[in-house]
Length: 183
Image (cartoon, rainbow, N blue to C red; front, top):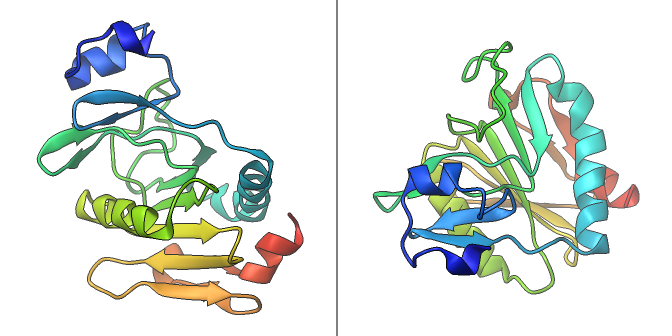
């Protein structure tokens, strides 16, 4: 159980301890259990997975709930994005470890749960960008919006029929309506 671990744990202990399991994030030296998603969160995550999976298939690794080893405020940080895409340019196609991603993703997607505020998620997006993640999407099922965070740019919120396209994520094109109409 996570409760029996010391308050501060090292990255190595976090990654190798059988007591922690795979549903915890390493934040500020603590193993913090990730909340289990509820139905609307899970439906939104599933819709995004279905919409993006075909695009990602020949471009990189795209998985739900895959942890990644990053650095946050100078300390090891192991978040578990709801969805994550890592291009084959960053992580070769034949990488086959059963481990957290060793490189920052090209795209991290977080779905806002009912108990989370957009402000908290925006701060997490800033942490992702500072850690080398190239794109972060914060998906808000209540507002039916997707806010895209880029390095050195203001966040942009998309709603309804607005098209999300990004030259960095070549060939990816979808509208917010496509996501929420399939939920």
